[in-house]
Image (cartoon, rainbow, N blue to C red; front, side, top):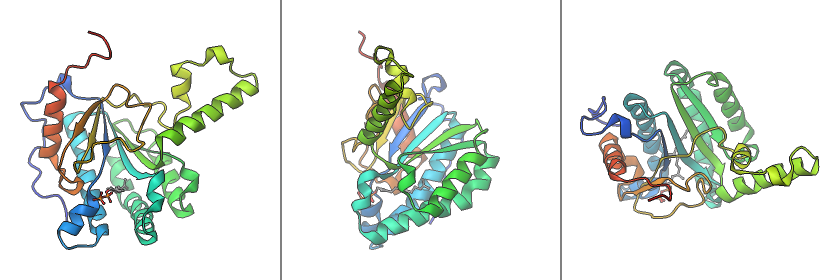
Length: 249
Ligand code: FPP
């Protein structure tokens, strides 16, 4: 199964280029329900989810969006059935192997954020290779949150800063937002302007808790494997209607 007839190759004329988000984050939810609804095993939803993700990445490039961050696997997802976890780990590695050449060609800089040391060794190798080989690319920043948890990210930043304080490298009075952000997994990315969650769930599920402080939130009932370019266009239209005040009047 692939993504059918994506006709919206260029930025649709009713979207304003100057009002596009620079950075979009996505909680790709609903893969399991999409598959079950078709009488298929849940893993087929993840497979179709990859096709949709590939097209969204291309779409971001086509339309001039600079960064895309997706939630591929949370620290809580280890609690899924063993076979599903194994399938996902194998899928991530397989997609990386298969897509690395194209990502290089299309100037994609891929980064993985999360506690990567806990991932299977084979996947860690694929991750290191893909990050190393694409590190000079600047076409689009593609961040994949894998074994990621927002609270854990904040805690590990605190630990790293506390260690530096202990060693006399940083004074407690010097700790500000810039220093804190520098110790997050996502440094040096800018914060997402827009966060999208599919499948009708309306929560952040421990995703980018620090970084989403001022992001616009878009929830849609559409399941992730159905989130094609026309759905993305709807999310961007909604974003362009918002007035971002950042706490000011
Ligand atoms: C949530 O749907 C989806 C996931 C936990 C996995 C998402 C992963 C992909 C789309 C693959 C990404 C691949 C790469 C290489 C980045 P769900 O299973 O929770 O769906 P449900 O809520 O309907 O059960």
